[in-house]
Amino acid sequence: MNTLATDKKLSVIASLLEGNSVRSTERMTGVHRDTICRLLVQVGDHCAALMDERMRNLHCGYIQADEIWTYVGKCLASTTLSGAGRRPVPEAQGRVTSVVRNGNSLIKQGITVWHRDAVRA
Image (cartoon, rainbow, N blue to C red; front, side, top):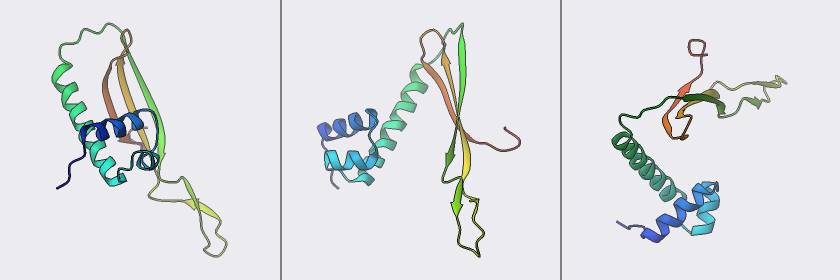
């Protein structure tokens, strides 16, 4: 099994942190996009474990909560079924990312992604 060198891993993560897409990171670093995605999952798991381990007994006097709503998939798609025009795509779903952070230090204390429906709207 091949292992990616540490300097290559760092350049991939740095590129993603700068806001580059997976495909542009693939072009810039020469690392395959599947490897980039696996590395991204590994780094995310390690970050979650670090936050779970270190962020205990926090004294927060001021909490900020925010929600970011977005689509996953397409909202509308063109169809060619007898001139039906545009219609909603059933697999296109709204997602909400809830972020909770300490207002004084802006340390993110919780991030949740959930499906927006009639019950949780």
